[in-house]
Length: 485
Image (cartoon, rainbow, N blue to C red):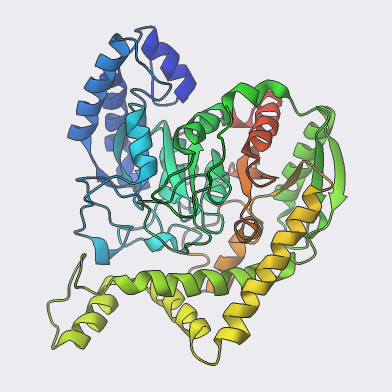
């Protein structure tokens, strides 16, 4: 039996029934990675010895009757999470030799439950990108079509799940970096509310926007993964001390009676006709399931993209100042003095997109321009968040496309950063508002590329979007498709 195309909940049942061991599952996934990753390039670092040791410990735990839902399940992590004793590069040359001294909170919580960590996944350098073409370790290929991008920046995390290289993965979402690759690779991806999951031990890109979330094969797995990593963490000052609901227990409550809002600003000219048709069909499915569909407005949506790239790049320029070739990471071998050491280490270590965003952010924060750009962007951000709160006073959740198009060819947008930035136009407002959203499959293009549907929830109401997504998933067949790879 093939165990590399199964869900967490199915494998958990088989592990408990003794039909398979965690060691067998782990070996099957390592063999799958060995057979396919030469083409996909989803992994930066593989940890076979550590994974098999963790799998053996999980098997012992299961035999003692102490199995958690994640015990013995092979999982992989975006290479932005600190993992004790394992190289953590953030897909950048400047961290090529960095080995983390401790586990981040989300990683530690997965390990406490007995999950098996297979390795670290490829991504856009420092999570900056919408296509996963900005990695120092080469681009990731979309398993549905190796000539197209998987989306970014968690492209490796999405591609690994789609290709059967891991049962589930963790990514991070700063402007759509979980939902957009989930959409392009035909898997489920969730960006939780800011503060729901600890960011302790996650390398920062834009601290007020970054959030940890799962990428999985179906919605039930997504609920299981969120349950494992969510909750207050005293080590993260932005972590919110609120109870974590039992997400899996409410999945079957149905969609009937929910009021779903369609923001008119998200169904715009330029939306690919195939994406539009798939989303309209999905709306009809929700209506048939008993949801009430109403039109709403998010009037400041047009300003979201400009606002995001001012806030995100300003925070990035500050966060990335710590990479100077002195404290950790790669140091230039040709420096002539301390100042030259700083500049050469950064020039040699960072890639082009990271340098572009550092310069944009430094300019926005510079004397004379702070009020005109950064401060104004923060005021616009407040208006965008208020738009969402006003909409949620009328409806239970919002439904939109995830991206204007399906996955695009590798190299198509690399020469035009503005076109690339538009890939995230439907996901960025959610990060600015700090609320939660989920992407799940809702169709395919004529060329066989997945299309995603976005459900946006009220702050800390992940349970409702998971419940609606599960109802949609049960009424459709899209999530059962896998790439023929």
